[in-house]
Image 1 (cartoon, rainbow, N blue to C red):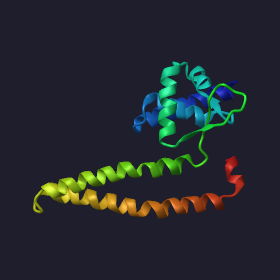
Image 2 (cartoon, rainbow, N blue to C red; image 1 turned 180 degrees about the vertical axis):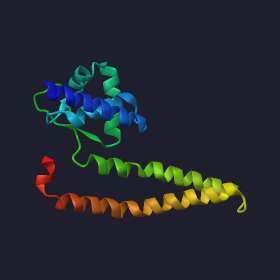
Image 3 (cartoon, rainbow, N blue to C red; image 1 turned 60 degrees about the horizontal axis):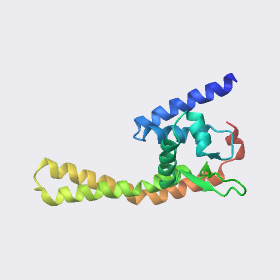
Image 4 (cartoon, one colour; image 1 turned 120 degrees about the vertical axis):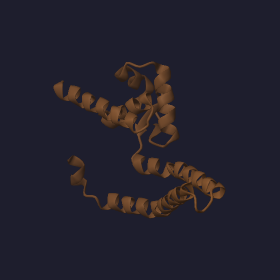
Length: 161
């Protein structure tokens, strides 16, 4: 029982870290449930019970996590409830979905460059911003490919750590 309590304390600490990183509170707590559950899949009702949260707030969090690709809906023959699990490749998918954020930042930098004078310090800063995001976008495909190769080479014994 004590081990389980310590796990849920760690889950709540992780949720706080995710919140500090910009995730909405309920989405962060819901994601922590997916990370720490000992079940293959969970329902929104089980999440609500675990978090002592309303069905509506959990529903919104689940929709948010589904939309960014961190979790997936599973078929549950014979069940009237939707079942969800953390995607196997959740982190790479999340990182890939961040490309839209990167592209938005890149567009903002380009817009700023277009309206500033080349001698203006703002122009220099915006150019650096643009260059960074162009570099990042160019590197992401190779980075993700290396990650997938790393995962395929990874010995199963490391999972037990």
